[in-house]
Length: 492
Image (cartoon, rainbow, N blue to C red):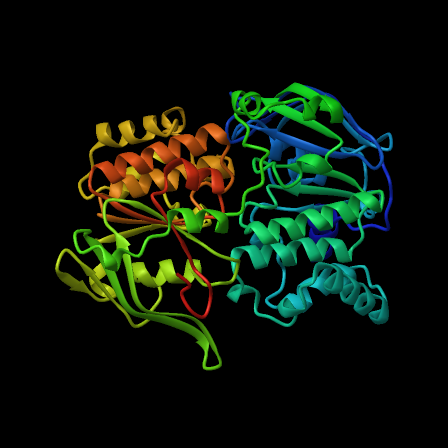
């Protein structure tokens, strides 16, 4: 059983096999929501060696499209489907595991969903071992991938101690080791910093040069825009536009925004630090949160960060930017008391240690699945309120375009929709200090603007917001300050 899941649905490894992908009048509705079609009469052909960008607003059907190819539908996501999906004229519904092995590899938005082991080297070897490849061949493949990915520092590491971006690099590498002919990427850059996204771009370029057929479902389009031969825009489950290279290059940012798409401009978050950074300690009239003595280390020899004295302005939105693995997420977890670490937070002339900060600080995690517990979206918001108020909860959902999903199970939503549910819970908590770890990860342009508007409203009502982000559009839209978080020491 373990073999078939890995080979057929997550890795579907291969030896560089080229294929023609054909969707013919495909419609699909999930069993969890039978009244709504996630794909509606989609007909699309992807040719050998093409790199195709699938994009559109959150919930438009991008992930569903990929799931129909990699076998997650119907094996893990049952529902009703009409139409046909073929690869090299082979119907996927009639293809055996043996016939499909060697064609498709998938990298998911949440890399945890495709890990089978607890250390990185074993993860890289796992798929090859399931194929019973010779040990020498496995080691050679791992060595080649590690060198091309420049991830020597991730070898022999505990997967659970990696940052979100580092986990995504291992997920990409584990697929590359298996040498598939078709590569599917579902929001692969969602948790990557600017440099890591550039590294992913280089990998996609290498895959493209090797003649791989690549389908990328993305909201963050700027790092792959010029690599793609075509851009397919989905809207309400249907193909709204199928643009060739010349047509896509003619699109302006304004036209992209009208399609609910992000900007194609590449701007590093670090470039905004110099513009927005301020030393609050020099302004005695500015009320700020003071953080003293915060530090964290995984081992005696590896200190992740040490902040002797850090000030963050109250009633403002402050972005923390920095490379993957610098400790930004860990810092937020220390700040809200999830992790034990020394440090005192001083807010409104009162000092708070870790346990005392519960009720003062609310954190929205990078992976919203970790904090969704109830049977409906509305219930998630209600349990986050100090005193349950259904009318107020529905009002919060309406502001985030979630009211139509109020009675839906949170786990039946798309990744971007789950993210907005977690943000709705933060708003409902009424905590004065709100922490957000990549709040716009997986969000389209409109949703990012709505989250930005919520941030501004929270600021105007007296909240202090600290957000870890790699999203320059988000920083430019709503953040008052951008601070560089640089690893072992805090870089101002």
